[in-house]
Length: 195
Ligand code: IMP
Ligand code: MG
Image (cartoon, rainbow, N blue to C red):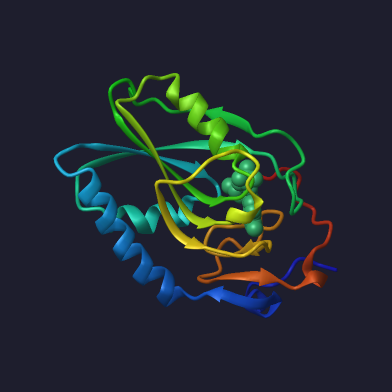
């Protein structure tokens, strides 16, 4: 089956879980929560790419305090809908994190392995504080004892795509978040998946 054409991306969804309006409204509230939490401080946001790119871009525009933005690449899925390797981190962060108030932004907290690895890595840089913000939380799947400090939406145990989340690098540009139809899981040509 060839890769889906852009016009049929929404049609590939079995169900829309969260629509664009709900995302927009939740991000406004989340931005306010984060701004209040870090009042009078400067924030260093570290976005876990690729999955958190769209969430980060929209969320930081709802944060009303000064911030700096960096990103960290993590990979573990290799074109699958389940992790194939332990999370591999590619750190090109150049900002000084020692003494900084660091907020990690990720797309989804699932088993917790990715965020635990990122936290452990960044903690070694001695930030003044280290917190986490995820768009989605699949609480029932956790095998690392981890709770995010800021959560957009709690969702059931289903593989979701859209608003930055991919299946084999596709569907990231969907404005909503939904569950993919089973027949859309296929062996695509892309070779490398980044979270
Ligand atoms: P964890 O390490 O199991 O917590 O998984 C976190 C990473 O897995 C996320 O950053 C995503 O890239 C990916 N992931 C987990 N669940 C989903 C999903 O439902 N859809 C798309 N990607 C997912
Ligand atoms: Mg991914």
